[in-house]
Image (cartoon, rainbow over all chains, first blue to last red; front, side):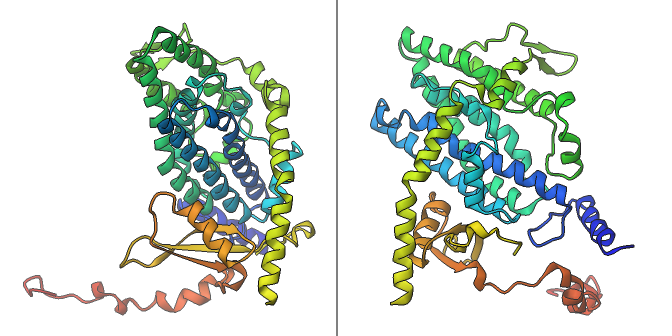
Amino acid sequence: MTATESLEKQFDETIARNDRIEPRDWMPEKYRKTLIRQVAQHAHSEIIGMQPEGNWITRAPSLRRKAILLAKVQDEAGHGLYLYSACETLGVSRRELTELLIEGQQKYSSIFNYPTLSYADVGTIGWLVDGAAICNQVPLCRTSYGPYGRSMIRICKEESFHQRQGFELLATMMRGTDEQRAMVQESVDRFWWPALMMFGPPDADSPNTEQSMAWGIKRDTNDELRQKFVDMTVPQAEALGVTLPDPSLVWNEERGHHDFGQPDWDEFMRVVKGGGPCNAQRIAHRRHAHEDGAWVREAATAFAAKGASA
Amino acid sequence: MSEVPEMVQDDWPLYEIFVRGKRGLNHVHVGSLHAADDEMALRHARDVYTRRNEGVSIWAVRSDAIAASSPDEKDPLFAPANDKVYRHPTFYSIPDDVPHM
């Protein structure tokens, strides 16, 4: 057995034992690359995800809502940082990842390329978008790469507040005027299908899933998670009193699950490839923030150098 | 750690962050972050890792100051403990009716 074969055997045995891979362990190059792609995309999503909601901070309807929204957007920044630091253990740098994002060479979740048109969207994002994210993320707490799993545990603990504040916001609006109820329904109509797209393409069109599951990076397929999300969300929608915009959504007694329609996958591909309503705006904003912050980074470096030489 | 590209040579150093959850507990590693100096590392650590009263004390340690055992040495380094089962209480059989053992 060559040295590489022996290392590969140890790696496979660790995965088979359901043990975690840690940063200094040998790992196949494809495992490392797959993880960098997935963790970076996840980190970028948290950071870009600050924008649609950050849009409403200055126009929150009350001090209570403003404080909640600020805390939530700050959490998203924190989640991005947990994930960037997990990603860095794979041998890429934070700076490199930021540059890949603003050069458009790495992706983020396509959901954030949709605009937030009313304050109800803050509630819908918390309820549906963060709800879908939780569905995705809970199994990732058991992912095979240690630092990624540990980041996910921290994130999941905090994400629950995000979903509950969203649901509560919508529930408050649903107890309000007809106009407010209409705002909620209109918002849910816009976000339902993009939320279903968050789980990625159907299993048949998801070429990476099989290998990612064999390596324990992913624990469930896209379609399994989407089904779970729909089953969880239907009773919540009933409690809210909103209608989910899918005429084929119906309980299937035999399967013990809901049947539901497929999102427009052509739209999904279009948005992933940059053709969504806000793709250009999101990246331009991120680039500006990065460039506008350059003098702060330089000043802090200069200050630290001065402190070190004093 | 692994190879760092040339372009990031001037990045802020990496710090490992340890948080004491409450009095009576050890500081535990919670993650890492970049900072220009120690003071900024502590400030950032507070914002990133203790937004919900997760800690009463923070240590920030430059990652390059940590000495770590390498996984390649795993077997020889930890092997001496493997064959010393007599270090564990379960190695000794004591009659069931002997109390408080």
